[in-house]
Each structure stands twice: as C-alpha cells, then as structure tokens.
Length: 290
Image 1 (cartoon, one colour):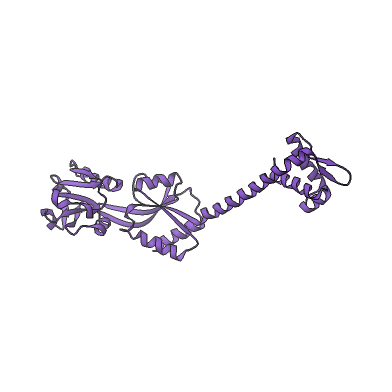
Image 2 (image 1 turned 120 degrees about the vertical axis):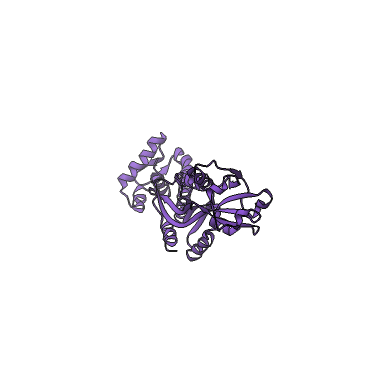
C-alpha cells in the first residue's frame, strides 16, 4: 500500500469531495479515484459512499481512517529521523586509532582538527593495528591510523603519516645500556620482553631474530607502559618502537638503538572502495598537509 495513496485517502475525508481533493493534491480526479480503488481492493472493503456531489465514509472507512493517520504520521517521523541520522553520518568521521596516539601527537592533531572544523564530529575507537584494519573492512570505522602490516593489503589507500624504528629499552644496571647501538646477536642470551597486545611490535621483534637465524629469547608481557616495567630487578630488555619508548620511558632505563635497523611506517588508511564523505575528505586533506 502506497503512503501517498493513504495521504490522498485522508485528504478526501477532509474535503468530502474527490474533485476538490484532487485539485489540492495536484493530481487528476481519475488518478485519485484509481488510487482509492487500489486501497479498497487491497482491504477488500469500500471506504466511501459516493454520490454525484459528495462522498462520505462508510463504516469500514471510518474504522480505517485512524489507522491510516497513524501509518502516515509514523512514516513521516521515520523519514525525519532517517534524514537526521544520515546527516550525522555524513558529518561524523569514524576513526580507528592505535593506543600510541600521544607518542605520534595524533591526539593534538585530532584536537586541532576539531577546533578548526566544528561542524564535523570525530568518533574514535582505540585498538591494535590488526583490529583496526578488520574494523575498517567490516565498516565499523572508515579511516584508521595503523602501522604497516600484511593485513593492510592492496584494497587500502595508505597515506604516510609517520616513521618509527625498533629500539631496545635497557635498565641502566645492564652493561648493554652503555652502548649507543646493540647488535641483535648480543641479545642471544638476554631476557627480552615484548608487549603481548601490540601485534606489529611483536612481529617486528621476532622477525629481526628470525632474519639473523637466532632463536628469539622473547617472552610476552601484558604491562602496557614502560614506566610500569621493573626491568632493573629482573634484568629484562624490552623491545619498543622509539616514539613510544621516548614518550613513556622510565628514567631508570635507557633507549638503545638496534642493529640491524628495523623501520616501521604509520599510515592513515581507508578502503579504496569506500566513497569518502565531505567530512572525511576534509580530514584527510588536513592530515596530508601537516
């Protein structure tokens, strides 16, 4: 049943005249009559008693009228809500962000963008790189700041945002702390830690041992920040990306370069198949020109 037909039915009940109703609806009287007949056929009941001069509601018409009004009213409310939500969707920018946003000054950038684009709403979801990539593919977010990884395949547009390197966080009590650079072979008999929750950091840390044909002396830790590491007591060495290590390092530790050098890229990415909204284009342009 067409909503427009129900509107026409309601208009006829207000005018009690098909010709007047047709004029007010800007349609022909014959079209209006056909539309009313279509409703009657679907209901299996006549809605109007027709005379040459006026029409009046039948008992079936009187019974149906309040329901027709409710249907039309709910439809109009639904359309209004849908349009409002569609506007919110167009103005909202759903971004996946890694926990290291402060290390790369992403927080400052998001704040600066919000201050200069007050009509746009940033909606952020924090997660590991792999989770963010999955969320973008599942359309739970449309943009994401992520480290380079094998899951970031050819279906993505990748906009370079930052570069980082793998480093060692060494307690000052460890003799390696006095070195400017530590070769991977010097870690063969050390106790090394890497964050369990940081997939790209884990992969990079294990790969550098794999490339050197060394069994990785690495164990996982759930501790998130370097300031929480008690490396001095257990004489552990932690793998980290340098910007993270610099941002949260404990003064009892030192950051030492690793050889061979392992570089990681951080991208702002989105799916090639995604049609960017005006707000998303504005955000990408803002990021690209920083």
